[in-house]
Image (cartoon, rainbow, N blue to C red; front, side, top):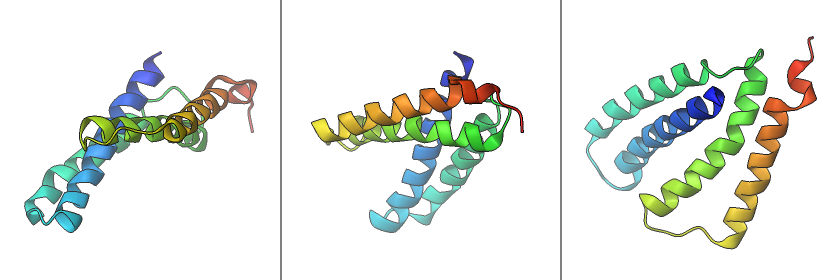
Length: 111
């Protein structure tokens, strides 16, 4: 359960950090937006190292599903565009995949 909390917090930090650059480069906001963006991306990287996984690649792969779902929440809550059913179906598929990677039998394999 701790891993999910770290993944969720990492997703907020990564999406927020990336959005800061989006705002600067695509929404004509000030370059000053990049400062909190960089800070948020550093927080993202630190949080991702706290996930309970023996291998970085497995932690990153599982995070991908969480990132997709969180991005769709961002789309809806921050950008005001409601995800369609295909977005939601895709997010569910990705979260199932993330769960399989993180808690499946492969999570216990050693190299």
